[in-house]
Length: 350
Image (cartoon, one colour):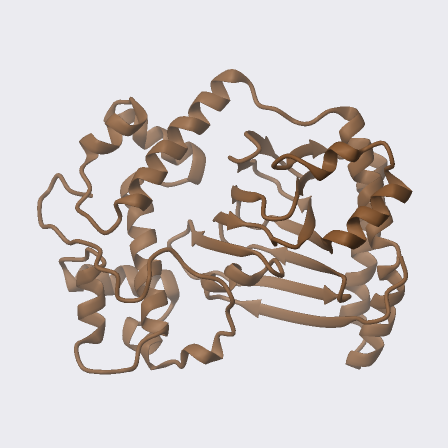
């Protein structure tokens, strides 16, 4: 595929909110699943009608949202040593997995720390024309909510070789214009290579989990969604157990299996990130940090300060001092600015 334009953007970032915009045109709500600050990387090569986003996550992440409404997206897992979970495709995944997302498809997945994904987003009309040429028998791709598949070894090698060449081009040349010329030439092979992997993966059959895994997925999603839907209210362990039809220990083990942390810590991470986002949107004024922390459900300011400093590598006051426009972030985070997340001092409340 011939491309006339090419813009290369590189970014190393620590703020998890940047994950809201790592897929061009998508609307993603990211949640960092680690309690300490980590550095992540993004390489974006934008060809206008399609865009490659190469993302390395420093932390384990949970992504929820929708993929671009005007484009098809193919997400190739370049590297993933530990299992990730795709809740919308109901499958686990490791290196060599590919997810296919029609326009506006749901995204609901976790990535372990260190995972590398290369997402190719292609404008709808361009993708349909390319499909006629490279995968004419795959009309069913144009309907449904997407699916996941395992890519064969040879096509994995082709993808990694092409993606590696683009990475080396960006790292090897100092001049931005040279980087973009080389990437534009390599970009001609991106869509055919992705479609070849997609075609083979479909012939091999989509990846589906066993029944017992699907049951655990459904229980986790029900409990997680209950937390997110009631995050502005006091939450009780008993309510979580009812939502998943599990014991307290069962809920604890389920969360540790799916996201690497228990439900109490998961809720704390969500609330910390909602405060972080609100601080970045607020004007500095006396008492603002305390106000937002209390609204988020933190009844003990000393504990809040410790949790916040540990997770973001700076105090909440330092975050407040930064200008929100410096972030250049497109997507929303869980919870609106100033949303009241109820606090409670009861020991049985999460």
